[in-house]
Image 1 (cartoon, rainbow, N blue to C red):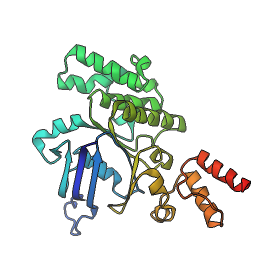
Image 2 (cartoon, one colour):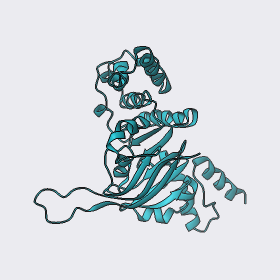
Image 3 (tube, helix red, strand yellow):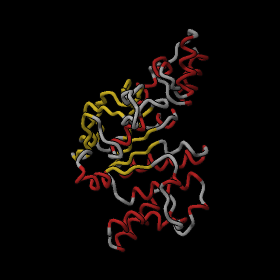
Image 4 (cartoon, rainbow, N blue to C red):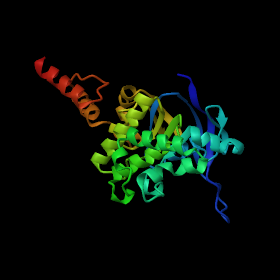
Length: 284
C-alpha cells in the first residue's frame, strides 16, 4: 500500500474572537500521521481531544495554522486544487439531515454529480451503483423523510460514493443512530473498505466500532498518544482509561481477571475470545 494521506507537524488554533486579548488555544499540537491507501483507520479520543478537527483538515474544511497536510499529493492549502482534493477525499458528517438536500433519494445522491456536469448516462450509472453499494437501491424513489436514521446515513454515504473518492472520512457517523442503524452503517463502511478498497478514516467514540478497524489512532489533548492495531492499542487498558476512554467489554473483563490474579491473555478483543479464555481457566 502506498501513502495516501500525509500529515506533517500539524498545528491548528481557532482564531481568537474580535476584542479578545487571550491567544487562541492550540487544538492540534504537532500531529505526524501517515495513512496508506486501502487502510481502515479509526480515530478515538474524548470530547476536545482534536479528533474531529483533525478529520476536517484531511478534507480541507480547516487549514493548518502551521505544518502540512497532503492527500494524494495535493496540498490541502492549495486553493486552486481544493475541488480536485474533495473529489478524492469525501466526508460524511454526524447528522445525515445536514447532508440531505433533495426530497427524493436518488435525486439527493445525484446532486453533487449534477453540479459537476457529469453526463446523464454516467450519472445514472453512478447513482444506481452507489445506492446498491449501501443496500438502499430499493428506496431510490422514496423520500428521505420516510427513512430511519441509519438509512439516511447510508444515503449520505451513497452520495459520497457516487463522487468515486479514493478516501472517505466519517466524522462520528453513528453518533445519532440506534443500535440497528449503527450496525447497518458499520457494515456498509467495512464493505466499502474490503470490497472496493476505499480508504476509510472513521472518527468514533464507540470502542466496538474501532475494534472492527485495521488500525486505531488515539488522540488526547491535541496529540497522538497511541497508534497501532486494535489488539495492540486496547492491550494498554490503563493508559486508555487514564485519558477518559473505555476499551471493549471483553478486553476490560479479561483485564479485571488479570488484576484479580487469573492468567488471561493480554490481547483479548472479542467476546468469543474472552469466553474461550475463561473456559480454559475452568479446564485448568
